[in-house]
Length: 595
Ligand SMILES: Nc1ncnc2c1ncn2[C@@H]1O[C@H](COP(=O)(O)OP(=O)(O)OP(=O)(O)O)[C@@H](O)[C@H]1O
Image 1 (tube, helix red, strand yellow):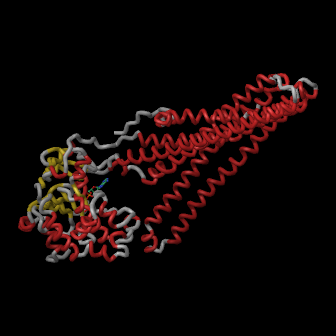
Image 2 (cartoon, protein in one colour; image 1 turned 90 degrees about the vertical axis):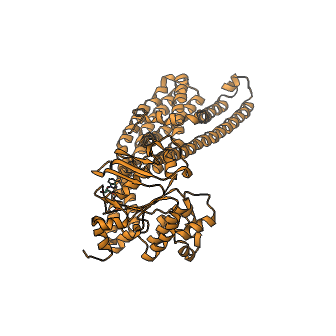
Image 3 (cartoon, protein in one colour; image 1 turned 120 degrees about the vertical axis):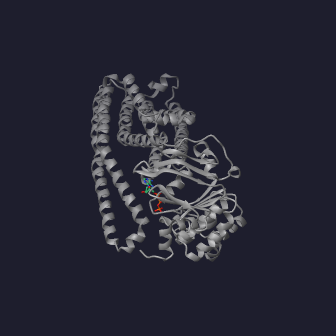
């Protein structure tokens, strides 16, 4: 299902096509970089003119252009210098503002676009990828691009302008020796590319090692309870120290090579500089070259060659930015979505009848999970789904919510294949309290309000009361404003479950699905929750998945799953009289028999 229309395109072309809305900004930023460089290159020429004035007097260049008095020439030169420096400063301010702004726009829209694109992918997409890697793309790679746009793009443009302008000065003003300053250039560029090629794999090793350190750290912080309960602190200290050491060594390897770059390149610059110093100097001594021109050439040689020392760094930034662009665009061009339906449906229009017709399902990996399943959940009914662990109960729920699509057969809601409905409408019709309760870092009230963002505090409290959560919430330090911590870790498992039940009740959907929703609460609390649920399940379809059979005992209908197949179904009493799997389980759970 993956498609990538820009596949094969150079990452720079992909980036530019992404920057289309900011094309005007890119053009202006480029223009300001060029203008700034042009004004920046003028001071060596001004020095040459100044030397020319004091050495040649009335015979100087300015003298020949009509300003005969050397004092006037100096004042004129001072005025021109001031204007040039003012413009140079203005354009520097402008290009910085424009490139940095562009970097901000780009990182902002790339991050938000990529995140929202990611969110649209089907669940299976996330199973095949590590969240660490996705976070690295959304953070590190986007930041890498931001850094390149901040400095790198301007650096590349300005080096190019420098070479063109100064090359022209040499060619036009001193062709006989100008080539000497240009000789080191190919070597400098070749040297930069060579260094960069040698450094690239070393840098990627550093990034890999940094990634390993950070994923181990994330893993360890998440598993602190396990580490402590097994007294494994020493083991983990060694593991982190080992990874950190590898990261340090990878970095040292880079440092040794990259530190040699500028000193070596300086030797090449020195060769060009000395050649001009000597040969142009001899010509000046012989009177073949004017002193002013000589000083211009000396300064300009420096101005030409020094910026080239930054080329290696800039190429490096460019390569990294392109690698990041490739990764970001790869994500943006990935399409692993379930095809959306076209039929809109409002929650109040939903009757709530589900039909499984010859449903087969398997995940991308592994064997069949649901096999030829046929069953009907009546509108407004409360049904229980029970069965051994791994029997396929949660998978049924994931299909109802369209986290996945069936691989065979169909599921109907109110007589229509659920694939025909708009996915967003479908999920709005059902409230799911899943087995893995997820609370966001924030307050209790924010977590209950999640999905019903406009609900009043009174409604939140009513929902919490029905979920038997109100009393314990009122005992928390800040009551409904208490911060629950990352993943709700400041609450007990049972408290987290009750908050997520309150969240589903507040949503007030026509279909309520509870997947092991009360597994972590004590029997007394469960009974209280059930009494509430009994009240709210009256006018909605309620699907309850439970291991504890007492939870589903009063359901209108109970489905017993075994190994992905529907093994038995009926009311509690019917199933007891059948003397099958359900009856056996009931006997074990009620203590009638022991295993
Ligand atoms: N994302 C997945 N990818 C591959 N296989 C999966 C995935 N999720 C579940 N399975 C497999 O599908 C089967 C059914 O899992 P499911 O979670 O539906 O069982 P369950 O009846 O809800 O079990 P439990 O009572 O333990 O929650 C299991 O064999 C499980 O290993």
